[in-house]
Length: 284
Image (tube, rainbow, N blue to C red; front, side):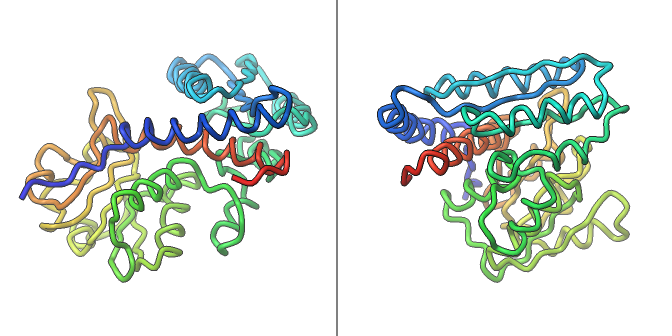
């Protein structure tokens, strides 16, 4: 039996149709005021500029508005905090995205944590992470939250299954592990320095590649019938997992590209729509 493709691109397109309806309802109630996602791009990294543009395009597709803030490479932490404060105070802005990474002179964590919890639609604040971990209302980090939405849509059973997350970043690996734990999976968190990593991955019913290294997780580490989620993307169109070979024996997998990436952006947009609904007192 061939492996099931967890098609994030198609799912994101389907979700956009439903989000367009919700945005239209907001506009109808609020005299044509659309939900607004503010994106902050600091510096001149071309990949970051591309990602910000993609998020702006996604806003347009569902009828939302995007407010793009571009700051110079020499921007200081104090200057960036002032910009975040301005957006926090703007009632017309419902979500704030600070594009990662920022120039090295900026304290990124301090700036992330300056974002209002109500507008933290990318799920990057420590407060939001803590609330998510405790099962309290909060917007989850967009990539792992998108993965969870995809697993739910494709009816991937998590209760009682052993999930191995390879990666420990604060906006991907760590929140991914806590979301899986909250979904009743048994979770092991690993990273590039884990001893005996291959043997640990071989125990997994669900493998999440979030280590940030191209094809770091080899196909022969993955047991037959496992569900494979590849959250990486690198030049040449490869992820963190050796997908070309692993698809021959896994039960389901996310393609690269077209798997996790589209659902990350879609989740960011969905959480911004939800934030607007909450701000305007509209039930979703």
